[in-house]
Amino acid sequence: PQVFAFFFVCYLLLCFGWFYLLFSAICSHLTNAQTKMSRNNNIRVHTIHWFMGILLIFKIMAMLSQSMRYFYIDKTGQGEGWEFVYYVFASLKGISLFIVILLIGTGWSLVKPYLNSKEKQIIAIVLCLQIIDNIALIFFDQTAPGSQSWLTWRDILHIVDILCCAAVLFPIIWSIRHLRQASQLSDDGTTKNLHNIQKLTLFRQFYILVVSYIYFTRIIVFLLAATLPFDKLWLRYIFSEFATFTFYLITGIKFRPREHNPYLPLKRSNPDDDDLVYLK
Image 1 (cartoon, helix red, strand yellow):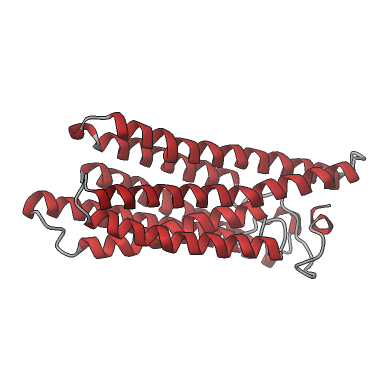
Image 2: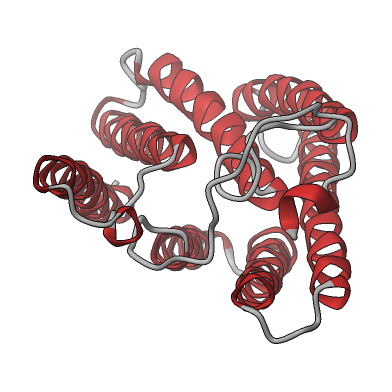
């Protein structure tokens, strides 16, 4: 329980810092509007930024309920109802995490104001996989460790999680491809092309960040847990949560509201039109 309590405090501080940044940006925007300062100096808060804050809240509640669950198991041998609370917030956190990664990867709210049909299909697939993943998590935790059914649910949980991780990479790859094409079409050294290059660099960094996070938490930690003795299995939670906290922190830094960011305000149009219209 001490491990989860420690990360609960870490995520709580991160959440306070994130919402402080968002409300500071809103206050700055209102101040600039009242003083009629240039729109380019505004710090814009997009819808995705609020989704990222909601994800942090779900993560905090999952850490708190997990900590309380293990605390009561250690004292009384039972979770005292905290299992249900943990399953609820763990499910919400898992769904929110993949949705946020998908939305950032598509550029929704940051680069374009819509989702095309392919991106909507990916989101629907991930939601279905997450439902299966959450069901597998409940059966996995409620089954005796080492039994045949426990091994079956463990494998299902791991496979579905890997499929979700693979699915969220496609929108990022599509965004990188579209941005590369847009930068090549406007390769004239103009401000518009510089914005495209900035966005391309940002999405490439995000792709590397997501791949590194998935590889470490889904493969390295899994292999590590398989080799650790039983009394040292708690170390996998430290490695996994440290990697997750680092991922949240770096993503927040790269996609935080700020002045002169590489995102351009865009006009709405048909969601199924070519994305390049919005990326040029």
